[in-house]
Image 1 (tube, rainbow, N blue to C red):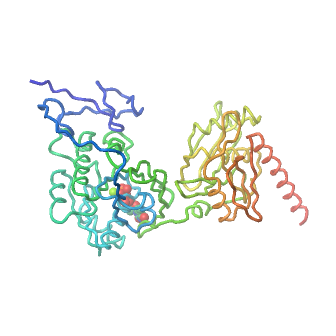
Image 2 (image 1 turned 90 degrees about the vertical axis):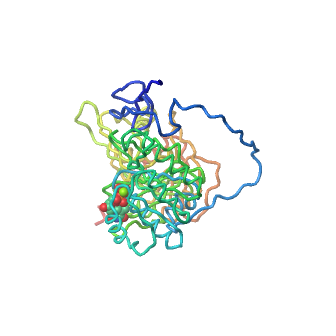
Image 3 (image 1 turned 180 degrees about the horizontal axis):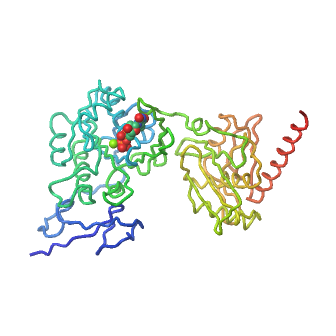
Length: 471
Ligand code: TYD
Ligand code: MG
């Protein structure tokens, strides 16, 4: 008899371990490893008689191709993030923290689609029918023809959605509640989640329905996170945002049918999520241009420019080891910029606490923000505000040189559109938009930037003094 052997699977990343351990080697998370039975589920595990394979026809790369057929939701930011609507026959994973608004967004999408005459099935594994109805009423979606079921068993769900006319879109909320009779592990474990998702993907591929899977990002390893199924689905979108702020960002991290660096921006309201077609205005909305330590970064999210304010506070420390706290930006990148400032510009921050915040709970992933961060740091240390109508972008290398970044012209155009009359940017061969009043300043290296900020700070300080003397 074949010996049954259990596996130890990390519930966060799915790494297989031979024995239990406190920390996962794969993702570095603690307490996420759980013993599971690999029998059943995908592939059925060992012990099954090998089946004789069937040869499939090989083909070439050239040949007829078709544009992927899509279902448009009409919610412009959602369509932007998915690359133009959900693709038929594909599976999309929408991940995010619990309570961030995934169910709300998908209910709105479902209602919008069903109003266009599509057949939409919403399978809720977390909320009872009455709760989903209440939400639909609140969102003004109750009058749409979305078909609803509260079910968690994979076989029952498949039987339900296979019945009748083929659905155009199926929403499974959430994958962590799915459980299948064929897998022996408890619901919420990696094996169960993968088995359930596999079955749903198979359904999508066979019938041509679009499948949307909701996955909660989990902090503790008690239930499997969405990362363990990322490789199986066609597109992965993460819904993110800060609980303290009223807008949400839908970020594409994988998309087999479209670009991956797009974002959709939504504003929360009591009536649900609203599209934000010009995110820069939102992120700069609460700006206080006169305070030192604030710099506006001209960033790009996919094809769309986004202006956002970065704020730095540099203060003398009373601790032996100064504090570095970062929100919305990579902390190791901050350490690098501090090191470059110290090594090449003589800006010493070893005796200072450094706090860095990206306004509005936005998260920057582009290295092009380096120059804005460095400017904010220097401005805060010097106690001099940066010119209020100036944007910054450019990547800083370890040698202190400022490196060019892509899409310079788009960044500058967006800045100009929003009333910024100057920019500090890397020297570039790209063609810059020509305009009457705007001043584009090419910065060669970080010392150049620091001396310019120091000079303009002095000038601003003088103007301020003069203004004070006048009255
Ligand atoms: P919900 O969609 O249930 O989050 P998730 O499915 O990701 O766990 O939303 C969480 C709560 O936030 C819910 O009580 C409704 C509320 N909410 C609003 O009131 N307005 C909104 O625009 C959004 C997105 C959520
Ligand atoms: Mg939900």
